Amino acid sequence: MEENACGVEDIVAAVEEDIVLGRLHPRERLVEEDLIERFNGKRHVVRQALFQLENIGLVERIKNRGAFVKTWTPEEVENLYAMREILELAGIDALPLPAAEAWLKELEAIHHEYSAAVDAQDLRQVFHLNIAFHRTLFAATGNPYLYQTINEFAQRAHGIRFIAIADTESLAQARREHQAMLEAIRAEDRAQLRQLCREHLLPSKNRYLDLYRRTFN
Image (tube, rainbow, N blue to C red; front, side, top):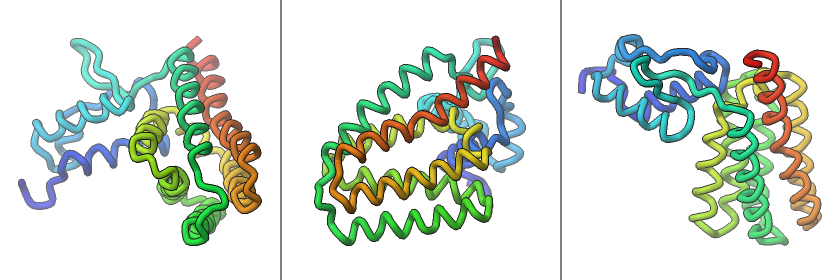
């Protein structure tokens, strides 16, 4: 590999971040030559990254036109979020309560960093710390297959979350909901935690659907 050339995972992570943070938009074309130049990569490496992004659900290929940032239809969004709700509620049901103190303190520490990133409007950190919060939460299920599947479906939704992560009130709401989840865990209130988990999925979905209707209908 050439000096400073990026590998497949580096390209996937960078493009994924660009989509979530709104630097790349639905229906925007991803030109291979531009990606090769940006990442100092070989064509086959860039193509492999695009295929991986397609498998994740962030990119779609249109015959004879190339690769584009995926535009989720309302039906696809509803189906994806219905599946996410099923999986994440199963994850909540599998969490051991009372919780291990070390795990809960780790979750609280991530939330503290997340809150600081929200205050600083550091959207890149907000994105990565949000992932860390939810992965740490569901890692406690003790079921690696459930954990992996929750993460896979959450990652598919990254192409939908871009509008919420750039909205100040959405970030403040997410922070409040994370804090409420921590309090429910401390109180060993699984029913409340389930309700919070269900409600936590709604803002990004609803904002995307509203944007879709205003933009594409």
